[in-house]
Image (cartoon, rainbow, N blue to C red):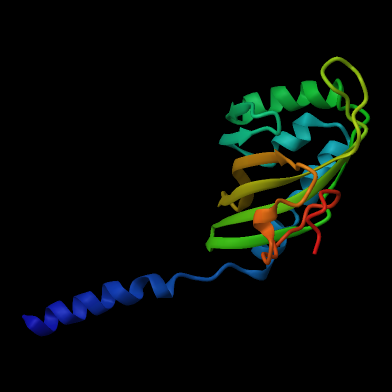
Length: 176
């Protein structure tokens, strides 16, 4: 009986280790998500942008608007990209990817936006920020299930002394 218990515990202990690692194709697909976002923005196409998110996605915009589901994400971005963001360009300077499981990854990417307008129609200065995406492979496709977009605040906080961030957002003074 003791041997059976030890054998079963050993089996359960190594079972997670046999999980298949993500493929090179998966790594490349996830790494390309920020560029796919930027390409849809360049076309000012909220419909194309929405194809990158899951039906049940949760997304917090840079203005702290919480969107739930692809339908609301699409409606919001169609309006935004055909309205005050219609002349906007979005560039993703740096990207990091960390796989949590073979079918789930976290993507952090810095961005630069130029050509957008405030809600009152006045032009904005170029902005910088960081987006965090959680992507999951569903039905053979990598889709964003959670997203958080954040505007950068210029300046290097004193708390960052002796700390090197994985992605330094351009234009903030946080570059190494």
